[in-house]
Image (cartoon, rainbow, N blue to C red; front, side, top):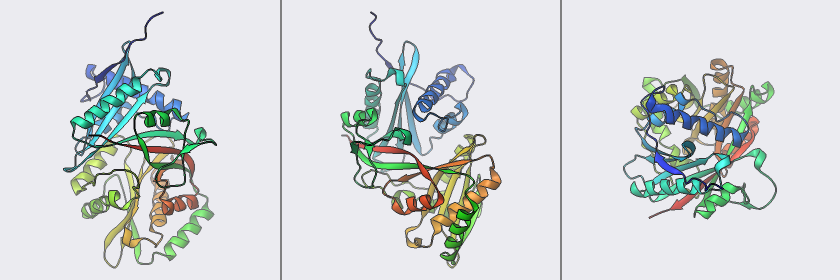
Length: 362
């Protein structure tokens, strides 16, 4: 009997471009991670091209992303990404660990996680976030692990939950992913829109595709900056994010390079002329699934159905710009009852749960 080969943990440099000798390992890794996603979700919702993944890793103006892989017998079998926000006072890091299913239970995930934690320590970070994903089809009756807030729980017998707990992580927050089939029934759309318009007489909606108008980009950046302040964050550590017009432009360019440009609708408070709500959808050039990104209503303008209004208007524009899209996925904190009520009214259905696990290191 041959002894099992120990994994080699090695840094994978991000190539300048694809189709070169320097990009071979990166392109191999993309294929491996797509296989991991297919095995977990049983569909291609989170299968991405090498071009899209390269654009994401090359966008390091506001986040430093370090990538290490596990290699066994010359083959990549896992990876860890350590993501560091570059805000001046940042104390957090995000660690993402994936191992191919056939190679789990051999200590590879533990070795990758240890490397990620070492990177966080070296970077002076003290608060780590890590994630586990749980498709709706894998949720079942039985004991669960709950976060500090929210009604949902993760299966206590999940290997990923047990892995996180074994390594000293606590469940800080559960995020619920939901799926909406398109188009919405006309009766439902019209009923929601009539109600939203009746409650928002002092507001109007504006929108754009791919890039924000020059005259709105600075104010839009100020609104985006509120995402880490105004959204529910019970039980998790978040660094404040400074958003400027330049950061908005770089974010837009990254998503265009990923072939997933943003479709944005904002609400303007007419008496003051200020932007007070927005919603974003990343729209892929192909495939039938789009991803809802941020939706935010400024705290002092809530209660006017603005979340419903901007989301409805954005879906109307989505049908015009991208008629090939037949589903939208969205993510919300499990304790964000107001936004989840909006999703329920739209007809969103449970897609999965994501555990945001927290660990303090020193």
